[in-house]
Length: 346
Ligand SMILES: O=C(O)CCC(=O)C(=O)O
Ligand SMILES: [Fe+2]
Image (cartoon, rainbow, N blue to C red; front, top):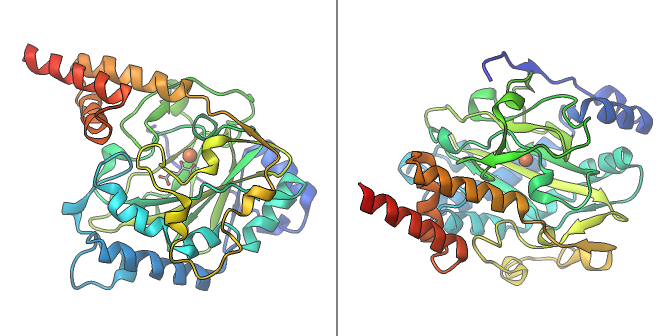
């Protein structure tokens, strides 16, 4: 973790060469492009998103929403009970979902995959508060979360410039090559799972992203977010996934993001959309749906319970969240029991 961060290789020079793109991602596990996406479209998207975030009360009053100056007293993240009040409003924006279908990305994905691709229905937005670094997305492989087929590719796009201090994405080149899912363990950070310490001690690459830049990587490539250490700026980004239409997709990827934690339906999301073409667009496309494998998440949660019993403050915090969020669930009840034990022993 202490090693210096290297710089991504830029792949714009091979953008029109399918074979070169395929060779490079096979070797490096990622492709980074400068300005692959239209900065003006992204600026409009940023405006839409930050207006909603501002209306939700997360921005410093009397600042221009486009600057994304956060009210840090509102800090929260995925899994916190107060997060969905604003997250869901952003997630309802038609423009957020449409961004996952822009030709610039879909065409590039088709070159990489070598056949027609399905943008997965579950689009993801990250709204990342500054000075909230215990919760930063830890080192992981996407396959543990999104599953389906190894040949699934994530496109991570900051919606605005994202210099290192704002907490952009970093990855370990070539880490997908073992074609295996590493053991993942409890983490307080987003996704709640991270790999062993020894795997984190690697050479990480990143960049100072400019608006329009994006990072495409394989589902087994080890990656993490850098901490947002700015005094007051919110990091806003999208991460969307693409696969061959002919490949299997895990059932939960047909649902809105975090639908398991904070239920919301597609009909609720679509309520104010002006066009219909992206509503349930996948229904005619998906060829094979596979069940979600809960082993990874269950194992991480069980470890969290054990760590909480041993007094680990991060695990205790995670268990408190589980109780507030879903007190009636098995996990919520197990977490409540552990918290009670801790209370009565202290
Ligand atoms: O943006 C983040 O913090 C996490 C993103 C991520 O893990 C991904 O794009 O797969
Ligand atoms: Fe990820």
